[in-house]
Image (cartoon, rainbow, N blue to C red; front, side, top):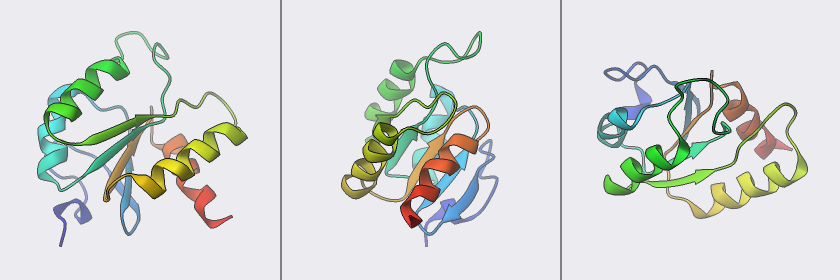
Length: 119
């Protein structure tokens, strides 16, 4: 059983919302080893760069993820979900290894993307 099925792994405050999908707020490059240790094989970032002052850039997270052997995709969402974002999410969901951790500022947009799978 994947250790990500437990909530609050180390410094990770995540919520499992599907069998192979969990969400959380903004992550930092330093958390990538814990994410890998928790068993995640891919990461989805639903947060645009520059949304908040001091927020890590996607490229920084991506470099740390790739170094840890985790696949990563950036599908930034500002406001309402658009058709293009939904399509990109569905493509990523089909192609990327599971389990997947998705993040944004609070986990809300990352959760909304997953909810489109049931449509």
